[in-house]
Length: 533
Image 1 (cartoon, rainbow, N blue to C red):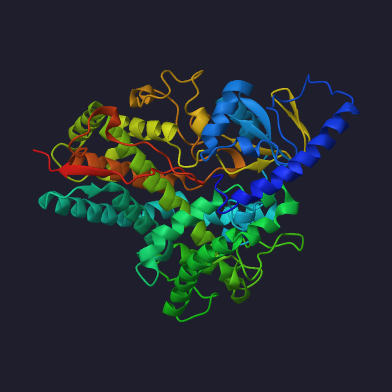
Image 2 (image 1 turned 90 degrees about the horizontal axis):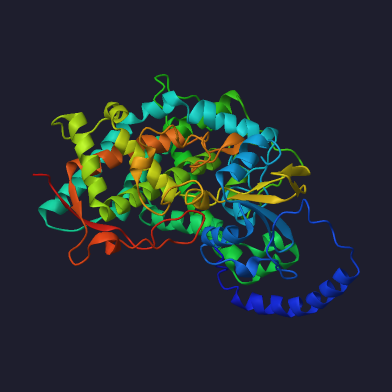
């Protein structure tokens, strides 16, 4: 998440005036309130009236929360406005929330940006816990991202990786540096789109698709004052932040709308038509088939929040109640593109910073493939060091440094502390991966720590949980990992890599992060590729 409030600087002056008034009231009320026993109270930093601890959060919130945890411990309570926020910064604290008390903490709080970008929080990731969520997730797990379906896209992965390799070879032949950031985004995006809609997206608006995706992730990471101080929600409309976000969402909606229309038109039927008999269908085909059969269809209750026409003008044209193809496709494309490109970018960054690790990985791959140029997915099971490199990258550079927030559905105790119903919870995956009480030399990139280790990223070992854990874990792990591992193996096997001349060692590559829901490199990763001797 980002604290960039897009023009809200003057809002803080307004809040300061309110603070001056309410601080007096707060001090007077404290004099007349009996002190509560601190025995079961969570450690918490001092807070200001009205804004709580919001003023203490920097642009990179995961880093700010880690700094707090160093003072207040692995489980602490902050206040974002009037909203209590429980922050878990160790594996033990995360396990308590996402495993021991998973059912208590498995719902989602309301977020304005989730409403804008995720169809009124009606997608699988952001919708509150309940029957609608269960049916929506079952569509994804059973029909869209099951192992057989993910494996069916193997040819797509191989073709797109081959295209990327050819682009790099062209750079080699012309002695041009390689913009790995751009190439890796294109790879991840093309794989995701071909799986989701059956083709790469190169139509109208395709040229700025990356910009749209990046803006969406940035907006979804914004701390919106109205989420924590509802009486100030109007500020987001006044300063134009909501309007800008809605325009970005509309741009992506238009792309997805065309995708669904193309599928319907191609089959010469409406959205209730059949899938093809051969079963070679992309995600949209599957979703349209489910609409027809009414299988596992989520229904919206009257009490559920519904997206306004301004947020989602397409809704009026969709069957209701029905599977929402655009919502599911967005759930597939955006996270898959962002996670895959981010992890591959950080992995190549660390390999360029650590040539010895790069050479060791190249040696392992060479021994496995025995003279072959292209790595195929069957080779991966014999590449233990490759898997260690990937897990170590996830440890240091999780795509989502803060997992999607959860909310306590009842009063409970966590690690002996009292937690009230309605308390929001944040799991700081970034801090967990750098916890010095668990990791030896936590800031060092050392894939060897995962050799002969049982730790994996499937959500059972809470030391590394980039895809979350429990009921609200991300079901796209297999889809992402199949691309990440085979792409990284081909990158380091088919080419030798070095940084541009003039920079050496750990300072060769800038590690500055961008603010937002996901953490990417601030600057493009540029490297020099050459063919192996």
